[in-house]
Length: 59
Image 1 (cartoon, rainbow, N blue to C red):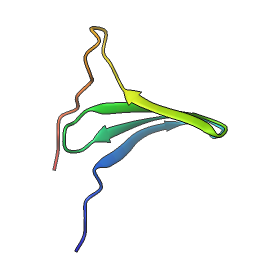
Image 2: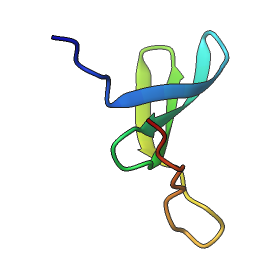
Image 3: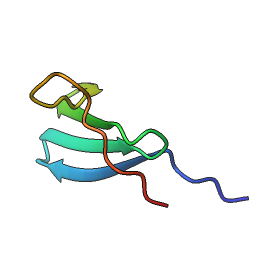
């Protein structure tokens, strides 16, 4: 039984100070992940109006 991964990384920048963009494959919502050393955090990516960026869902 193969299980699809729900989140897919679509962008990565940096090695020690990392910025990544992840997409939820079920909802299409984009998230920004930021890591610096041992600290990190994730938040929804927002557009200019403060609404979450939603990518089209492709199978």
